[in-house]
Image 1 (cartoon, rainbow, N blue to C red):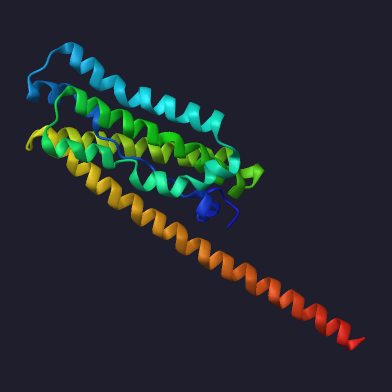
Image 2: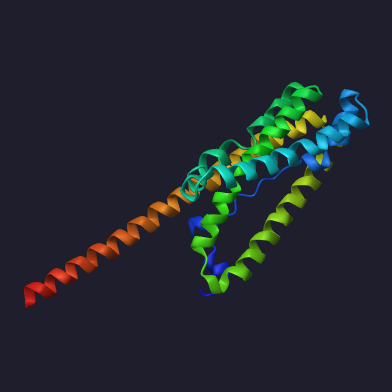
Length: 206
């Protein structure tokens, strides 16, 4: 298929979208642990601050190959700090968990490189539109589900639960990426072998 969506099956185009429920929960969590508006502000800005720091560090301190190599391990653990909410942490520990989760966004630069390599230039604009729309939709749904869940369960349990579910989802995606890479590698190896055998037959025929 030549359309943009048909090109999104390769490993470089897998969108490892982080379903972060946090944007829907800072105020309810602050209310749950009995802190004021200043703490709400800290909780709301902690993850974005970590996100910016992580991407700036990866962009300035790591080379292109290293940025690609860290995608899998960092993406696999990026949500695990939020599991700290299972113990109903106070503001300092909650802020630390959020900053660590934000710092893990360093993997996204390598993911972008996968995307650029995998998508033909003439389809890149459409493919980027599809990927961005998908990410925003998934994140919006995640926040809506988190907000709804917080109506029935304590906020700290909701956040910790999303950390577990999100990590499991990312691991499934990473496993699929690995299987795709193995299949494509085997296909490339088979084609190379066939081409080499053809060259040998040609030389023998002469």
